[in-house]
Length: 90
Image (cartoon, rainbow, N blue to C red; front, side, top):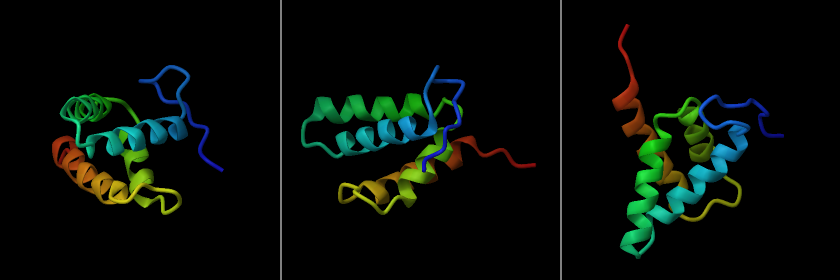
């Protein structure tokens, strides 16, 4: 089953729910519609400030079941960017 750990940044939100939100935002960020893409990218940027985002994003990147084509790869690219922006040496 999925983790039932609650996240502080999303009251009542669980990692699994965050994974679903991230997956939806990743799919939307690949949309041909510019407004949809811009909104999804803003969601992902804002999500990056929330506790548990990196873990949930990692789970999306590793999930092999039912993923829209390109979603896992995009999750890995976003995760790489997230790590570069948030990693603290030492």
